[in-house]
Amino acid sequence: MSHTKKNLIKVKNLKKHFSSGLFHKTCVKAVDGISFCIPSGKTLGMVGESGSGKSTVGRCILRLIEPTCGEIYFQGKDILATKGDHRNLRKQMQIIFQDADGSMNPRIKVIDQLLEPLRVHKLLNGQIKETAADLMKLVNLSADLMDRYPHELSGGQRQRIGIARAISINPGFIVADEAAASLDLLVQAQMMDLLKRLQSERGISYLYISHNLPIIRRMADTVAVMYLGRFVETGKTKDIFNSPAHPYTQALLSAVPSINPLARPKKNMLRGEIPSPLQPSCGCSFHPRCSQAGTICSQIIPEKRHIGRDHWAWCHFVSHKRAAA
Ligand SMILES: Nc1ncnc2c1ncn2[C@@H]1O[C@H](COP(=O)(O)OP(=O)(O)OP(=O)(O)O)[C@@H](O)[C@H]1O
Ligand SMILES: [Mg+2]
Image (cartoon, rainbow, N blue to C red; front, side):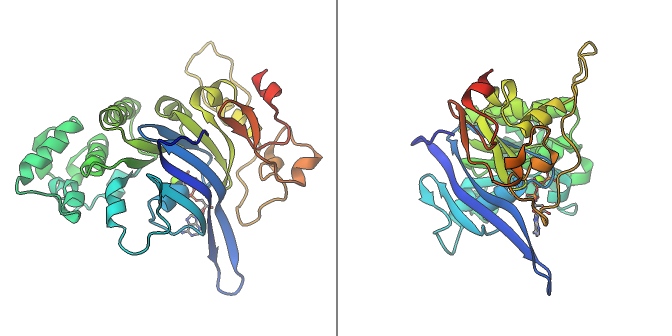
């Protein structure tokens, strides 16, 4: 990914290792040395199977958890170097969760949950109902809903409240972690349109995390494909989808079902499940499942290889020419 001056987020060699166990210490390398940039007003889509480390990346950037090491810059400022009160930073960065139900308190009325970030940051003026109504209008919700409890809303409405809450304090950056996953397809499409509209109106940058490749294709400007804590491929969305270079990306794309009845089902090239991060394999972590693996793959971790403009893959067998073919 190109490093421009307009990068809102810049992450360098980020690692998050979790250790557990009292006597037999085990270490999960949830994120193991990744670097990327997100320019202002742009979306980085992060994909990968369950357990690949996507949410951990988002949580590290928001400092909901402390990274093991690495550098995270927001507007050019190293946020890991700033100790103490992160309130100002929190104002600039928000998260939208997959599970709006789980992130809302069932006993607190919608209006109070909606306005909580404004209250916390002392940005709420006297016009409480008016502010709530404006926010709800922004996400196409009727102001009548503000006096209800969360269970009295539909899943899509709750998710809109989550979005309204996140944008209420005008953040520059939002982590959307499977933000549309629990919704039906139509509501999913509306949600994506809403996030895109807010992005173009306010210049917000998104880290959009999802298993769902069609959603990533629609939302992201650039894509990072993760496998067991590392990137295996990064590039512009159209390059990742039109000419995927890494066998893992190719396998993920081949697993997307087609709704065209005339389309021949594609062969799913992915063998087995993602291995336990407690027992990482030597060499390329994808090699035990890779249909194209050679001897070197079980011995040496692949370096980043240049495939094309802003297109990179971590595989011994990809090259500029082969990927373009
Ligand atoms: N607090 C924690 N303590 C120990 N291990 C953790 C912790 N949080 C995450 N992990 C481990 O880190 C790895 C990455 O988890 P993470 O939630 O980031 O994956 P993910 O890609 O977001 O998965 P999903 O798509 O299922 O949400 C997993 O093996 C997980 O079990
Ligand atoms: Mg996750």
